[in-house]
Amino acid sequence: LDLGYERRTIVSGIREAYTPEDLEGMRIIVICNLKPATIRGVQSKGMLLAAETPDGEGLALLTVDRDIPLGARVR
Image (cartoon, rainbow, N blue to C red; front, side, top):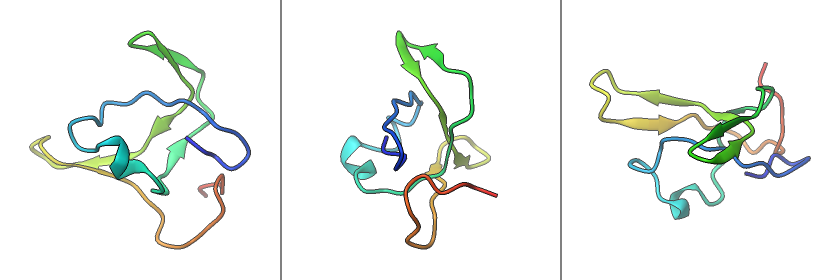
């Protein structure tokens, strides 16, 4: 994941909803100030933010609606 000021690996459970190709070029909102955690044997340094349907069947990553620099802070 390119944060603008560095690249990070973030492990998530979105495989059912998105392919790697779907994510290319997508500007998503992530939490970066979390303590690194090992998930499925891989160190994850952040968390993707997503919305889920009430039945748990649908998932949508939170994105920005304007062209802002990578690494911009959420306020």
